[in-house]
Length: 113
Length: 112
Image (cartoon, rainbow over the protein chains, first blue to last red):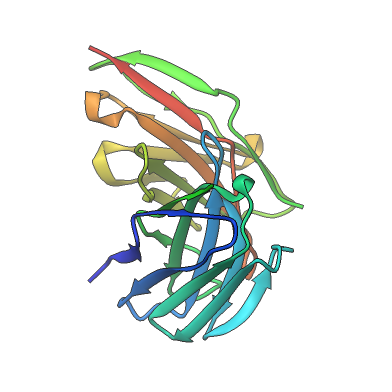
């Protein structure tokens, strides 16, 4: 299995809602990443987990809360988002954080109303 | 800090023509180099990578890239473009233990 899966594919939420994005991989990778991508822009790194521990937080607002419950799963909890947070959220994984050949999931298209 | 420049925002080629997408990087040593492709609304797919060794690397879908240390470049090429190659292409660099930095991307349009 060489796939990274993400659910849901699309999400529409209000500014007072709480929702979660989910990412899963079964390649035995020990590094997992969250990126945010706006239209016509490159992905921007948000968080990196290495061996289930948060390794990098790119000064992301606290309304985004990552969680890595085990080596195969990565969640992104969303609360009190703003309309400017609407974007494609991409999850990726790599064998190790140092081996940065990343495998990307298809993304979750998030719209904040 | 490392940086990546993709000088061409948009390129249009005819189907069957050759393609070259440019990528220049700035870093004190040789980083790991990658090319990714992204179709609309999709995730990124790795086309090829350079870590060390042979400076001409072959990738998937008939793509290749050449690393030129003297020019700090890692240009992507394909001898004959297919309509299905129309997409966004990102060059990325990564230093050991560090984060990946992506270029701004090049949009490829393929004319019939």
